[in-house]
Image (cartoon, rainbow over all chains, first blue to last red; front, side, top):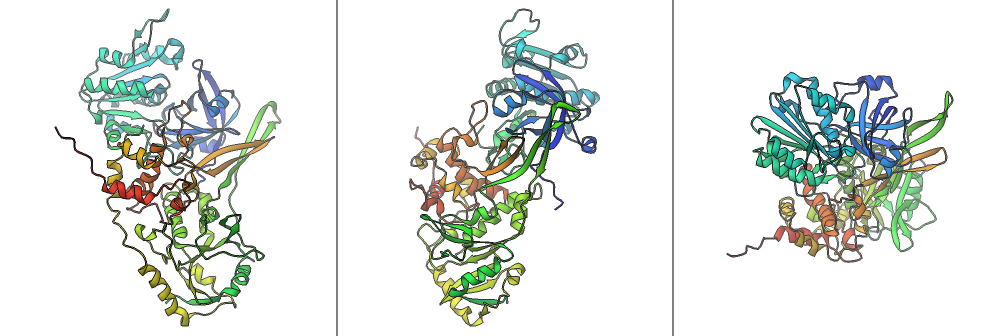
Length: 277
Length: 353
């Protein structure tokens, strides 16, 4: 039978483990099958299932962009059994990967527009893919604004590139934390409030946001105040998933399966779906 | 016209015995208090008077099956390094299921649209589905939980079957529905059935005539969405529900599954098992957030999936075969028919002022 096995992971090797924060690590992995690695293609926003063999699988966004294919990068926040096991892995260890899965950011529709990224906590991971993809295709997009917030500096991932983002002339980066912290030189305040202070124009703009549910809720309200319409807002959702291919039946919102029809939705698409986030 | 053959009741076991020489044959029989589909055993009585307690779902979609075997080994170049090899475990062999009812077998056609779609084909499901033949027993009577005629089917619906067997005096009239079914009708135990054709037609007509008028469910997809946010509606219809999940396990069209890993020493397996959307854990996220936190939310999803979301995705086909097992076996008396009709009839109360 010459049909791809949906459930058989590709074996991959962890090339590097980056300790991002006290509960987030990042894996840089390459598929063991060199041909498969060479032919691997994906779109910004696609996700993958990582296997901790013996424990199970969980879903993570590929947070390196398709323009940088030396490795595939995944960031993992420790929260359950699978992520705890994944946190015990080190460089050289074997890991299973089923990817790419899901849909992707509608970056074609964003060409020529100003872009506003609003990321909270680990929600920065999916935005990182698209941000780097856009920076690698910089002339396709207008002004790019990034607002990245975390509870404290200790919760902020991707520290190794934040300075570069702050220094770039073609990227307007704002970092914020929830409360004052010694030595912190950037903004202090909740993401939606800081967003209102920055007040990016909604004209010919798209806002892309991801973060914890409470942050998303108030960020959407802030975006609305700034004049962003539902179709100008893009977000990416999370659900408990098993198969990742729309079969096993748990991640649906009405007739939309987040694993295959998502995880990326526009605000307008979300309003069409039943209210079950 | 498709060939018809007659099988005497007294020859049924011998015939299944012949078929069992080259196939795994499943037939309904008592195990404890329940009638289930089990591997054919000539020593055991076959029970076909009424539909089985559990449908033959597991013959194509086992309650639990291995997807992948994995093995750990030490890297001979670097003994501190563990290598992992993962291998698929595909189902082998052919099977014949005797004695499923039209509702049971039609249920697999609802799996097919999900498990063998153009976007994604599940090779485990496909391997069993392609290699399983169904000799389906038309119903000569119905129970008060039966409602196959509500969902565009009938007690003699051959959809998904290879042979339709109709009970006639002294035996069964076997009608080939597919080429594969025809190829199974070569045994010397079978005799010419042409003379029994009229009797079989009469059996089919009598049971069809005995059915009450089916309600029109065309509005169900829309109406179920309209009551989606009405949590009081769902709390009321789910009040009796114990969240036991019997409805899902006994449902011929419930296809949700879980995937778990098991290890023993240096090897292990990734296993797929039936899952149950009535359980709070079904959608519970690692953060503790649960998009379906109460049984009202969960029953809403089960009914909504079958009568609204699935039809929305699959040309209006309702993902319920009307077998009525969820009603018959529910320890609390939840009746999915009542819920759907109530949603269809629901009119929001307009508060004056």
